[in-house]
Structures are given as C-alpha cells and as structure tokens.
Image (cartoon, rainbow, N blue to C red; front, side, top):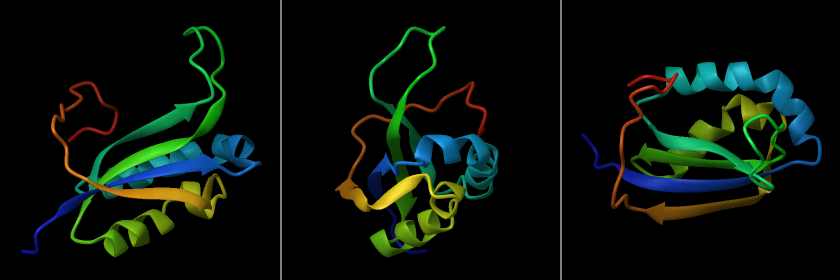
Length: 113
C-alpha cells in the first residue's frame, strides 16, 4: 500500500456558488460518505460568523484529504458535486501539503467513520 499524505484545499465560491450550494449540498454530502476513507475534515468558510439563528453567508469551503498524491486528491475533488455543480472556484483554489498536529474525530458527525 502506498503512503498517504494530507492535502488542505481552500476554495472560494463562484459568484453563483451560494445559489448552486442549495441544489448540491445533499449530493455533496452523499459523495463525502462514498469516499470517506479520503476525507479527514472539511466545512464551510463564512464571510462572518453570525448568531445561530442568523443565516450564514458562505465564502467558500475547506477540505482536508488523505491521499497518495496531490493529483489523487485533486481528481477526487473534481468529481465532487460542489465542483460539478459550480459551487467552488477552481481558478482561485489553494492547495497546501500539510500534516495534522492534532485531529479529533467528530463523534456526532453526520458522515460517520
């Protein structure tokens, strides 16, 4: 088995990303469940933190993947519904080679482990 490394992707949303997110969130979450062996973490990036009762304004997403290469991680995310559904702006994407110093499993995560 090949050694795996961690890759942190930072995506800004496309101008229509917030609207497209409405239609692609469920398929995106299904996709994450299908490939959860690669997925170490991720979530939205907000323009500002709002109170829990206030609607959040999305700015983008962050994704932490565990893959054998950056190419493998990139190819996986190119199949993600947030890519195919035109939520993420790949032209502005940032990719970092990282290593977690601390990573805690989310016991109540809707994605499970």
